[in-house]
Length: 471
Image (cartoon, rainbow, N blue to C red; front, side, top):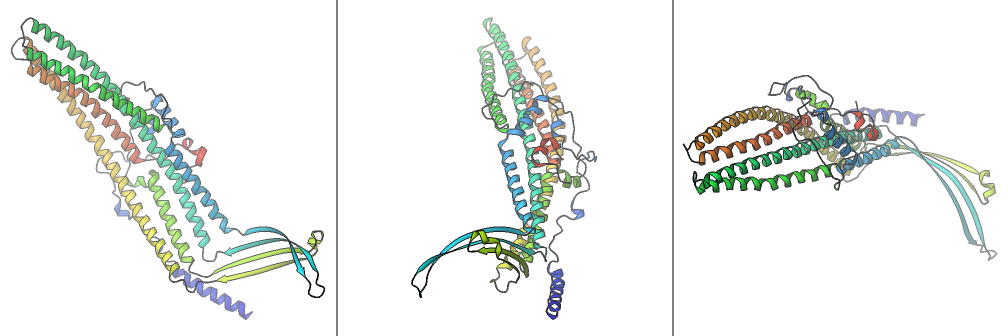
């Protein structure tokens, strides 16, 4: 009884010591006043939890490409494979909290020689046993390992959601670029037809002696310049088709996007307030879960410096004849208390290493949060200013068209030479192409905004693989 009391007193003292030993493991990653109350641009503060990227254009062709990419994209499949690895690792760690039971059957034969008789004989032996061992999780080391694995698994799920959002954004950007190339290609064909018509008219005027050869050469140069742009547009379009096929996971497929004009935005995202990003961005939530896992790893490393108690039990049946195997048996129960005494500082170094990794993960989490806020701010600025820029371009285009009309009238009346007509025509045609390019950027910036705001994906996109999202 005295021994039991002494052991109880020792355990109580160690328990009190451990309370202070495990203090101050977690850091304060983000302070309340570090996140802005609102964005620098006035936007709707309505909270939007669901990722609306697929509804941005609500185009059946685009949605079909997105669904195909989600099924076949190799980068996404690689992310899913990493999730499956993490899931298996989580199951391995979870098994540590249960006793392990092993069974063994050992038949053996031994040859011996008697010194008295000088004869040798064979002796058989059969053994059937079961063994079990279990570590008492007095300090919560195994519980901490399990929690760490669960946090890592949740992070892997969120990585998969992040990969889907990125893939949807890339598909949408590629789709927009292909449409842009279609529109630019048709515009160049129209400009080429117009420029060739002007060339015919100038040649007729030249044949009648109304203009000089310089006017003909200048218009020929315009036609040649327009022709030189068409192969570049075609090449860029084919490159985007190749990129789209790669994103869809089938590089040899023949894609055909029929839309020839930009689709209006069917759904405009609500930015909310910056703090909403902590829940809406899956990459932020993944980083937070990895931070929590790192705290549990520090706990595990600290607990490894304390004594551990392992209980074991084994039972065996033994006999020289297999028929009599169950006639004799024995059971062994044992407990083993181990404590590190000298390890040349290895366990303390492992704890310091876990702390350093935890601190690095905390910095990574802060960086992820602040970078997410920056991405939203950038996208808001880009969409707002791009809209203003397009309106200014349209106004410039209107004035340039009026100047071109006036220059043509004066040229036809013989009041000026062809150079003003040529100058204003090149300006109008350049602005025609630039308007298409800037409108493409305007829609691209909205896609950036959708991606930056994040949001939870519809469960139908991933529930069949990784189940429901974490809450």
